[in-house]
Length: 182
Image (tube, rainbow, N blue to C red):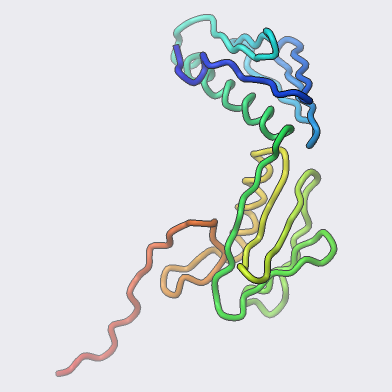
């Protein structure tokens, strides 16, 4: 039995879960998510908990058991508390600004790069710490939006300039050695 898969998912107060066969809908104060799961995995609601079961020990079903539980736990966490990813801006003259709800990135191009948030995503910037916060209730969408923004100017290994995740370590390379003594 999967160690992750056999743990039930606790449903906090204020979150409603509706299980119809293999379709699960989770609604909470932050938003509403819906997902269809594999038909080989059983999802049952018991005493304000979601219990995930599997029919056999086939490798494909074993792989889906823990994954299904993790996705359901992320859905419940997202609609109750939400998710957040922080990006850091590193480089001389690099900065970010909010233009309404859109994000304007000034990262070394001849023009600012404008990023419009997808539905369910919001941005926050802090000029003092040079950080961008991407917030939302769908973990997958928050992560993909952060990756798309980071892809505008990924960190480069020689000077370390660019957009990076908070706490991300960039492996630095040595530049040219220059002319040595003969």
